[in-house]
Length: 246
Image (cartoon, rainbow, N blue to C red; front, side):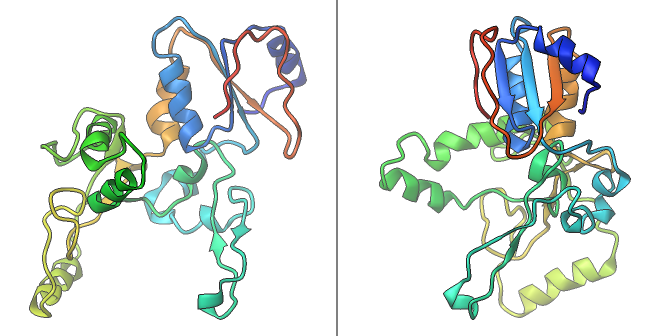
């Protein structure tokens, strides 16, 4: 993502249709969508560095990048009165893919009733029936799609091998204790004990950098990346006819 001074000088003379500030979870998706028609160029600015490290790409190393200052901004909450005044660590990604490159790989959607509550509070168009098609459109589920899950999207999800016998024993124990069982926490019934989806595809972390940005970089339409210094105001060049922040 970082560029040499020569390439940066050359880039400063280029014209871009869109400028996206931040190559995090949203920025990578935007870069893909805005360049998809083949007619618009995109400049993507990111303060963090490359996500190619094995500790990011290897799912079993998930706890490592979120505890490294190289990849994590190390934000903390304000003191929480309900937690004895403690400030909690809130990992946020400082790398290509943003937090999708350092998170715990858990893929779980909001509860349908939360979306319905949003509508009740005035967020028209954000009901569960409104957002479900977008969830399905984004997802490429290894186990296949259905009325709740997607199979042809870019974000890979999977259950994994589930070969450890303790996994099945845990679910049986939960049922024996009287808790409900759910076949799919992202399907018809979220409540209960069941298998957890992961954002893993073909044995690698499926961050938005892997799912959206890298395919966009292979297009004929220019999608350029530049590493930007932290805490520095980004000026909009006169040569950029349209600029968007992401």
